[in-house]
Image (tube, rainbow, N blue to C red; front, side, top):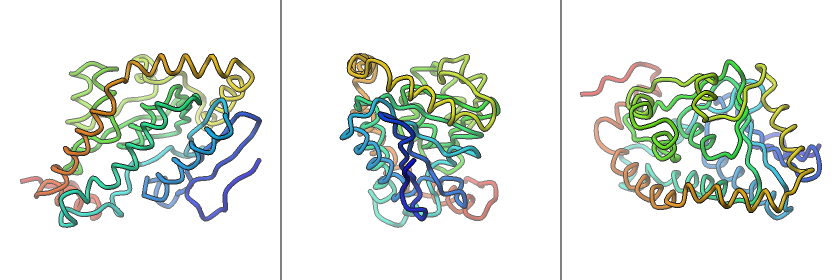
Length: 262
């Protein structure tokens, strides 16, 4: 198994022919998604496409998937009108490439996928989650709008009312609930999600890869208007990234306290 240098926040591994594993490795930041992490995920997907791999597994390892966007490294409300949304372009490019890729993208989720990380999971073709995992969209608590396409996927998958509860109130969704709602493919014993996702990827690599790529393109028609939604999302993030709500949400997060919105 080959991997990138240890200092990098994403390791690219090839456990078998036709299979790529992209493993987040920022444990000190709970695999938070900063600029370098997003860029390396995009680079890994592009490399898998050049190799004409059958499947790509995105995992955070056996401890957790990701805590979402790295708030500490995000531009603040005073950084300019478009600055808060600048990193969103990387997330949008990643989500778009995942949906358009010929490769089947599989998420392996342990413990939690929060915020933008949940958006990345929602863009995957298959999802394996640990039985004790959960998903959460804590954007409102940060004084921000939903990003990474979460407000696109959740109403279409859960219905408007259930989606609103997650996006306005930050209610968590357990792996069991997510499977019942059709948001994930299957659950695995805690700590075994990545191993199971690699098994599925290996099965796909031994199957009709060209036919599967065509089938994926047909399934993607269900998200034909995703690009326009993401463009609107970027504008919304630029607006929400300014003003007292965003400032208080960021300060509360960095100070590890509950926000006090006025």
